[in-house]
Image 1 (tube, rainbow, N blue to C red):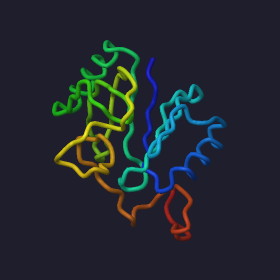
Image 2 (cartoon, helix red, strand yellow):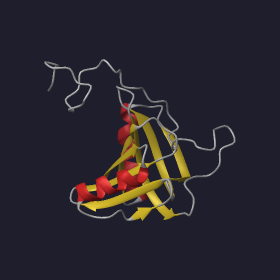
Image 3 (cartoon, rainbow, N blue to C red):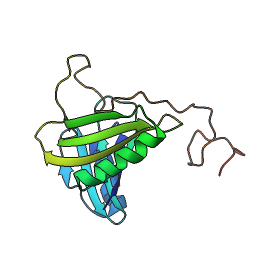
Image 4 (cartoon, rainbow, N blue to C red):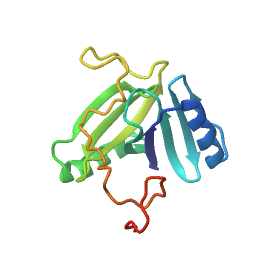
Amino acid sequence: MKRLHVHISVNDLANSIRFYSGMFATEPTVVKTDYAKWMLDEPRMNFAISQRGATTGLNHLGIQVESAHELGEMQSRLASLQPDLEKEEGVACCYAKSDKYWVNDPSGIAWETFHTLNTIPVFGEPDKTKAETQACCIPLAKTKVKSESPCCVPSTQTKEGSACC
């Protein structure tokens, strides 16, 4: 069975944990100094937040699978859509050791499909080519949202009469 994965970068971890715990009506299943995760059954989702220097907002989306077989099925599907997907085996990221595949959707949003093998005590393995506070383990470039883009989310910056879905 698959589980939707959403990872959001936040500015204030403690306040975000309070907010999402209230929204989901449950405390996180994992809490670290820079990371928290809720493994929700309703809706079936792996929801994670982190405070690691990334731009605040959506970090990436994903599909978490429960077996190597399911991961192979997802890899086949994704490879037919985007042949240059990136494979990672036994990679340390987000306090877990996982096998995964990465693709970007047509809009540039990073999607991760992964099978978690085990938990680990660190966020990820050090990478000498990246800053110590690397945002996450996303190997692919992501596009940024343009500030002038119309959006359906209410905001203090939304102008009256703006377009909405």
